[in-house]
Length: 441
Image (cartoon, rainbow, N blue to C red; front, side):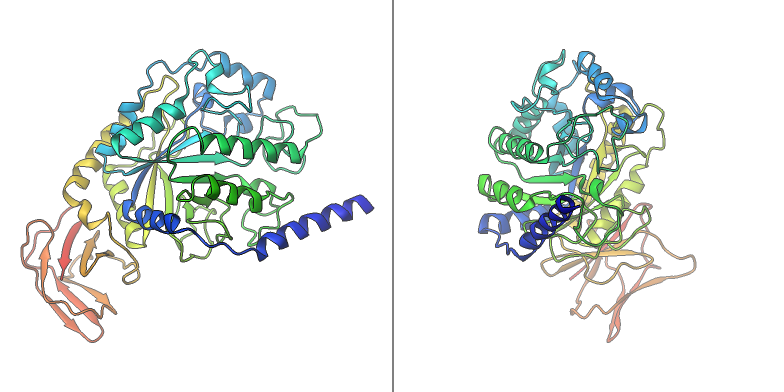
C-alpha cells in the first residue's frame, strides 16, 4: 500500500510540474505555425507490416495476435513496388502541400532504420528505409514532411501494457519497465529529427490508451508520459518542428497545433471529438474509405465531391484537412484512391486560391456553406442551397463590401449589405454542383 501511494504521488507531482511549466515558442516555430495554416491540405499515410494482413492497422489488437506470431510479418512484408516519387507526386498533384507519414504505429513496427529496435522495415525482405525515401522525395518536390509517432506499443514488453487498454492479447508476460520505454521513445525521436532533414511536425497518438475514459478532460493518465522531457527535446533538435498530440483534449504546454480525428472542429459525431477549440492552428483528419490502414474488404469509398466538401468545411472553420490513404502491402496506393485524388487535384488547380493561404471562422458555418478569407478578399463557398431560395444571407459580416463576383469567371453577383449582414442573390447565376464560389471585395 505504501509503495502504491508513493507511485500515485509521483505521478501527480509529475503532472503538476509539467502543468506549471510555461512554453515560449521560438520565432522559427511561430513562422512554421503560419505556414502550416496556409497549407490547408495534406496527405496522411497509414502503412507498415500490418498491411500484409489487409485488415487495417489495428489488426494485431483486433484479432488478438500474439507478438511472437505477429513478428512473422517481418518475413513476408516486401513492398517491391513502392515508389516514393509516385507517392509524393500523387499528393502534390492533388493540391496537398504536406505529408504526415506513419513512422511507428501501435504495433511497434518501425518504418525506418532505427538502431533502437530489431522490429523494423530494414529487417524485412525489402530491407530499405521507407521513411528516408519519402522524406528525401518530399524535400526534392517541395512538400513538407511530418512524422506520426505512436506513444503506445502492443509489441514491446517495457511499455506499461498492464495498465493499457489495448494490446491485451499480445502474449506479454514480462513486467514492464517504464523508464526503459521512455528512454527508447526519446532515442527514436532523436533519430527521426536528426537523420531525415527538416521535419515540419511530430504527430503523436496513443495517450488515450492509459486513460480510464477516452473523453476524460484531464491529462491524469495512469502513466507519466514525460512530455516535459519529450517536447523540449523535439523543439531543441528542430525549433521549427510543430508538435501535436491526438489525446482528444485541449493542447497543453509544448504543443503547437490541435488535431481532431474524423470530425470537424466543434463536432463530435464519432465520439473522438468534443474537445474545446484552442487558439492554436487546427487540423482535422479523415479517411478515404472507412479504414486508416489497408483493408481489402472496405469499399466504402468517399466521392471526390465529399472530400472537397470536407476540405472546404475544414478551411471555413480555420482548420487544415489531413486526408488518409492506406497503401497496399506491395507499396501501391490503390486505384480507387488515386483516381479520386486526381479529381480533387483538378478542382484544386482551379480553386486552391480560395482555400490555401486563407483563414476561416469569418462567421460561423451556415447551412449553405462557409466563408474563407485572404487579406481583404472573402470567399463564399456555397455547398448547398435550399430549394426556392434565391439568396443566401451572411450574418454579422461587418466589413464593407463593394463588389461580388463569381470566382474565376468574374461574373457580377447581386448583393445587398445591411446592418445585420449581407444578402447575396443567386437568381442570375449558374450554381456549381460541387461548390459555387463567390468572391467579395
